[in-house]
Structures are given as C-alpha cells and as structure tokens.
Image (cartoon, rainbow, N blue to C red; front, side, top):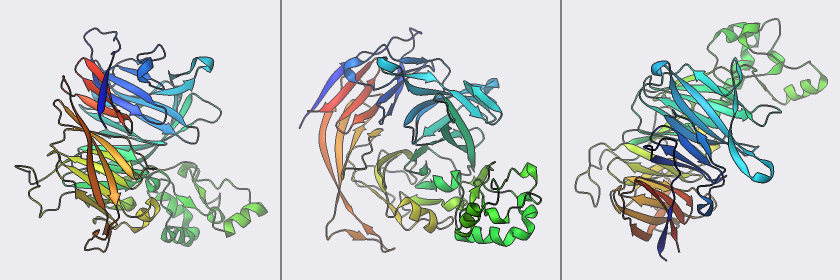
Length: 468
C-alpha cells in the first residue's frame, strides 16, 4: 500500500492578496468550504477533485470570523453558517447558506432566510451575544452552538426548516452554558456537546438541553403541583418543560407564561392523558447551566490522571494537558489531541440514552474512560472521517511541518483486555501506520474526504493525498 498525491488549483479571490487559510468539509453532501484570510469563503457542493474549481461555487462575502456546516434531518438539507461582528463587536450577526437543487444544473449554496424570535424572513439575524476577539461555531445534526470567549458563554441552538419553505430556516435558542473554566476545543456530534478542558473532556448530552428532561421524578413532581400550577409557572422553568394536559387549566395558567394546553378535551385526548402522553409547552424557556455543575446529566472524563506526569516516548510532558482537538471516530468513540501532541481515545461504554440517566452530578462518569495511545509523533494537526459502520477507523496526522501520516485503529477483543477498578472492560486498540508522505511545502491544514484520501492545504497550494 502506498500514498500518492495530486495538486489542485486554488480559486482566484476577489482580493489578489487573499489566500486560503483553512478548510471545512461536510461528508454527507461532499461539500467543501475554503476559508480565506480576508474573512471571505468559497463554497463547493459535491466536491470532486476532477471538477475543482467549478462554476457552481458560491462566494461568501466578508466578514466571516467563524463558520461551520450543519445538517438538517429528516430533510437532509445542508447549511453553512457564518458569524461576524456587529456594533464594534458588542453583538454578532448570523448568516446561513442552504444547499439547494438548481434543477438540471446540479446543486448550489444559496442565502437562506432566517426566522428567529421577532425576525422573520431575514437573510441575517443579530444576536445579543458579544463577539469580542474570538467566536467559535460548531454544528452537527439539527443543532449548533456559538461560543463567545468575551462573555464565557456557549449558546445552544436547534434548527429546522420552516413549514412549507425550502429556503427558510427556523432557529430556536435552547440553552446557555455559563463557562467557569477555560475550554480549548468544542465538538458537537452523535448527540453530545464535548468541551476540551485541562486534563478532562466535559460531556453534555444534547437531548435534555434541547428537549428538556424526561425523568420520572419530574413528571411526578408536576402531577403533585396540579393544585398550584400558577406558582409553578412563576418559577424559572427549564427548556422543554412537559406538563400533563389533564392538569393544565386555562383559567389558572397566565397567558404570559407561554404554556398552553393545546387540547379540546376530546375523548381521544383523554385516553392519551391516561397513557401518560404529555405536551411540550409552545414557548420554550432557555435553560441555563453552569459548566461544572453536573446538571442536565453532564459529566467529565479524565484524559490524563494526576499520577501520570510523564508519557512514554516524550522527553518532557507538562503537568497539565489541554484537550485542543476532539474528533469523532464512531458512535461511542472519540479521538483527542492534547497540547503536548499526544493522542487519547475516549470510549463510551453505554448508549447515549443510558448515559443521560446514569451520569452522576459533578463526578467522573464510570461508564466512560479515556486512555492515551502510544506516541507515534508529536501531532500538531489531526483529521478523522468518522465511520460508524466499520470496525477500523482511519486518522491523518501531521507534525505541522512537512510530514503526513495515515494510521488505522482497530478494536481487538482478546483475553488480555483490561478490567479497570470500576469493573468496566477496556478493549485493546491496535494502531498500524498505513503510509507516510513528506510534503515539499509546510502543511497548514488537512481534512479527510474519504477513509483513504485527504485534502491537504499548504501555503499557496492544495493537494489530494490518497491510498493507492
């Protein structure tokens, strides 16, 4: 097996001095975004090396200080989101492009109209969140987050297509995470929000942040509050509160609370009530949670135990490691890059639903564990294309200089599997180096476009590296 490379032409920017600074790739639609250092971008739908650059690309005007892709289900629409400063950075503007069909001429990204609170059908919405000097965007399926370093907050949004409109996106602010500790990376995937901190990965399940909790104790508490529903409505209700229809009386619920029964008391509705079917409130409250509170079933996993002060193969390792990059390997597995260039694997031993209801408040989660891989090199750039259908995962590594390595990782079920102190069985992972390339130019960024090919950005050049 050998690696081969082919050079791709770079697009010509409207500003001759602008150059490509980073890459973003959306696997389901094969969409590629080239981020330029003049804060503009080029969007390419259905990217293929043989048609690049093509006439169907879309130019995103500056400024775009942060960007991400977002996929909507069940429609399978792909969105490209950008953030830019407003009013000297005291707030920010959100813009969205949506991938639509052009009939017989293929697909292209078009500006999308946005519905958010009182703004309807606008091509950009203003958010009362300070932009400051740094903003991060992260997107996944039906949800995205905005991280403002200036105010130490993460805003969690849900998105969906507006009814009957193919180019209008409805946005809902669902949660605010108050940050009490610095974070160095943020990833949204597989139903989880993962924050890279010092020595730990903090995990927030998205379902309770977007749809609200559904624990039996809360349902029981709501039933007991039927005699004083007015007092209940005066409290700071969490997002996605579910109230049994049979305890909501229109005369007791104030209109300004935003909670409505939505039922007419028919026989069908009464039967549904007896079976415990609840109705979400029409006006969802935005839940607020502290980063380190352990609320909403959040938990953390240590990536570097305190007793490990040195790593095999490294001359010097700092006492604290920052989780600077988080990539999804599979449904229950993540690959972590730390600030010393080491790699860690984070494993969830249970399903996402079980994680939500078993996580302990402000405690490490016993059903998730992380371990460090043997040091192959001091990694500076990491690119992974998740493949939940395969037992073997691939990762592209670079030292940030001139070398690029392709490695494979495979779980091995053997009698030598380790049983940790919590009784959890840890699988062994076999790492194989599939190939290496020494580039003629310094590697600036890389993104995988398949399990065996990677797009590599160098100053003034771009290459496709693949396995022959």
